[in-house]
Amino acid sequence: MILWKAFRHAETPFYLKAAMLLVPLYLVSPIDIIPDFIPFLGIMDDFVVVPLLMSWIVSRLPLDVTAQRAYAHAPGNRRGYGQTIDGQARRR
Image 1 (cartoon, rainbow, N blue to C red):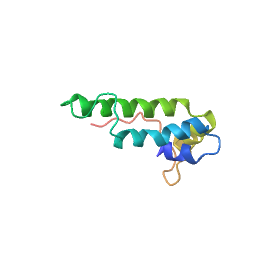
Image 2 (cartoon, helix red, strand yellow):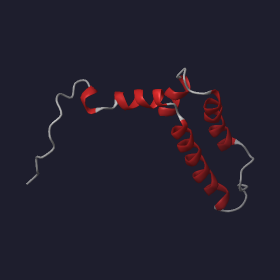
Image 3 (tube, rainbow, N blue to C red):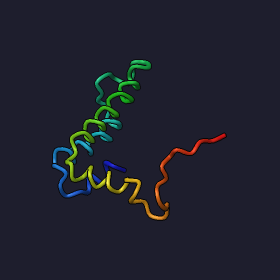
């Protein structure tokens, strides 16, 4: 969801938008770092490379894009949830 909003945001650089398109392309591409015909390692590289690429993209997003996300998820900005409590209550 973060990457989709960042992809549609005007201030996201073109190279990050291109990287966002290349990540799913890497998953379906027959060209991998470790070929898929090698048992276990061929599939595991997809499970390692894709999250690393996604975290790299998110870390490079402009502050305007990530600040809007942080503002939308701030505790005081949630509609319908009421006021925030202090969190000192304990369950017995």
